Structures are given as structure tokens and as C-alpha cells.
Length: 76
Image 1: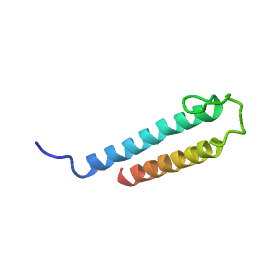
Image 2: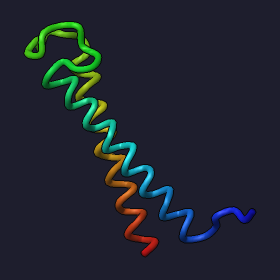
Image 3: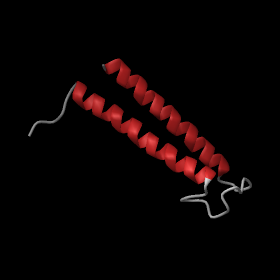
């Protein structure tokens, strides 16, 4: 069995990074807006100590998605 090498593996890793960061972006956004799945308070409870964690998670997911997209453009 041959391992994937070269551009095929690199493109797959870029797409995986974009996909995982997109999923995390949606999860953090849902938690920030609707309180699903992690917040135990009400959806509009902005006094929760985890609001900053949600915002930082959104920012980190967006940065990872951009880096994956930028690397994918370099490969193609």
C-alpha cells in the first residue's frame, strides 16, 4: 500500500484544516449566540465568563481557515 505524497497529501491537509476550522467556527458561533452546546446560561447572557473564550475561538478558527486557504492557493 502506497502512502499519499506530494501535492495530493498537501491539498488534503489544507482541506482538512479548512473543514475542521469551519466546524469549530460554527460551534463557537452557536455557543456565543444561542448558548448551544456549552453555555449553561441563557443565550443572551453576556455576563458569562466564557464569552471571551467564544470570541477568541472564533478568531482562531478564522485565522486557521485563512491559513489553510492561503496554503492551498500556493499549492495549486
